[in-house]
Length: 273
Image 1 (cartoon, helix red, strand yellow):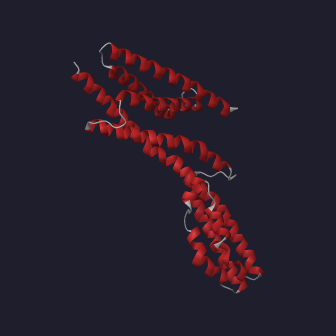
Image 2: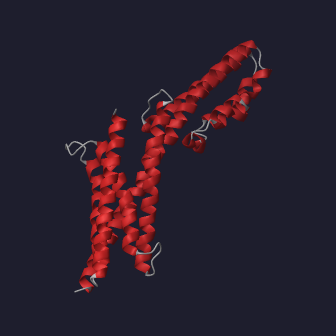
Image 3: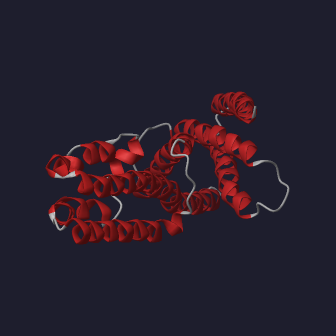
């Protein structure tokens, strides 16, 4: 139901964006026919859109103020972002401008657009991927959780060696499994939805199982079970980390573009007087 409302909001804002673009294009064409400067019209519209996009970050910081739902603002942000790209090309008239200042502004604008599109994509995919793990964990707690799992594994390995009198499990842990349990692994695979960690556990991770006796197998299976839990935690580490860190790129770039666009607007108006 909520997803349907979100899709409906995106469609509504999409239609409004098309209408705004069509109106701006018609007004700029009319200004050109009247021997005016159409870039003034498209530039003003583009600046207003960029400022409204920047307000999305302010809205997130004021979540306690009833200014509409997060889905509403996200739908607006997506539609306005696509409109900004179309308006930018209409305003510039070129994919890549000539002047140095304009090139820097264009480069930053493209970076913001790319990171925005990527961010929207991962914000749609990664939460679903995390829900499939069926566990919840706070991102800041992940290093402590991994350390706790590693301590449990090492305790099992030590107990196995002590009670069975064999160091086969211990040697395999030191030579192979220690690498896996020492820190989060298979970051790329977890982000793209692969199962490289699971394949590794079922392959090299359990290669020594055939050489174990029955008492050692019981301990070893517990170690692998903890490894499977760590796979799920590693997925949270990769996906939650990407969801948090892409904003550290997108938001500063957005602010830089807005500041440069405002300065560009001021310069154009000053020298046009």
